[in-house]
Image (cartoon, rainbow, N blue to C red; front, top):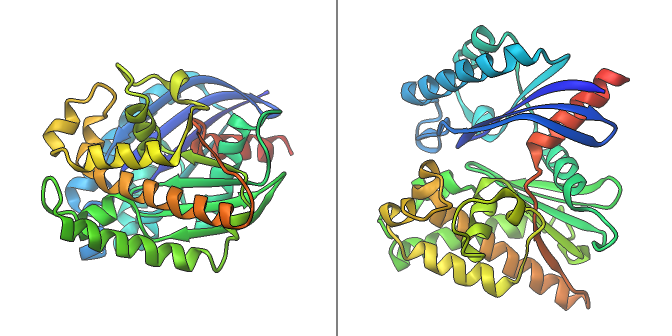
Length: 318
């Protein structure tokens, strides 16, 4: 058994998992999510905003207080899309190091995809699911598509995410038809590029991960509150995702905040996230049907954070 602390710092959220890991079994000790919006404005400015860094560092201090008493044997802090793009990322690295005592690692889109796959598939693969699996990790700044069976075979990171598309296109609240059309054009262009790298038609089990997709699933299921157990492994149809997307897009941010399963920090970017999810589910499902297959659409509550923890434990045990 290895006790691991894993940190996942994305464009929208900073997350923590402390767990005891034996083989591929994760015994969770602490799991936290803080909406820090690190990627605020980065698509336009190319740099982290001072207030975004302040929010992120405050969350690091809170996490340090949680992790310290649990005394993990191994730790890893992974930074993804926003941190690859920022011109002032050294300021971010220094702040993390000062508060947590470890270095943030900016991983490539390929490694991000592999960690997402490891975490997602470990949570849902059983006798009822069929490979190949296609994992979709929808973040604030990027969205990964990863195809594999026992291991990752193909992967691609698209530069579309809930924060990025909101800031780029969906400026009205709720968005206009023209804004939605512009966002869809970006999504379609990104998917066209992704198809050059990932043969999505081979997929038989689609696994959606990360907070945007789990929240969309909660909305599709009309849950009275955010329920991790009800969401994990839930199966949706393409029609459910499309209907839920239209409902969320038609709401104002204030109306979304009032939904019982909605994290307030996601409300303003949820329309863009839902648009990405529903569009790709529809396009991928069509490719699979055209190839003579059928696609199951599942949601996993295990994702890149769990993949970071599992990978770090394996390294520590090697």
